[in-house]
Length: 91
Image (cartoon, rainbow, N blue to C red; front, side, top):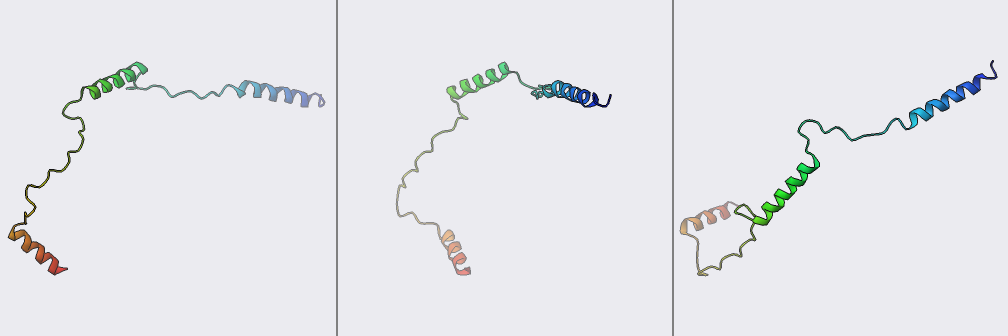
């Protein structure tokens, strides 16, 4: 009887290994409440593409170049000059 015991435990161990080896297969988590389907995602992307192609007032615009100054001798007002001078004196 003791001579057969290692064979039986080996068979049981082999059976457990075979049955449990492929039983764990990771799966994607469930969609859950509020999850989007593939078709909803495709429709969302198409809507974004149509909106981008249409343009509109909310679309980003290229920056405008700065307007050239009409006169080069524009000086700040006397009040601004006084404030600048006071700030420089405090340094």
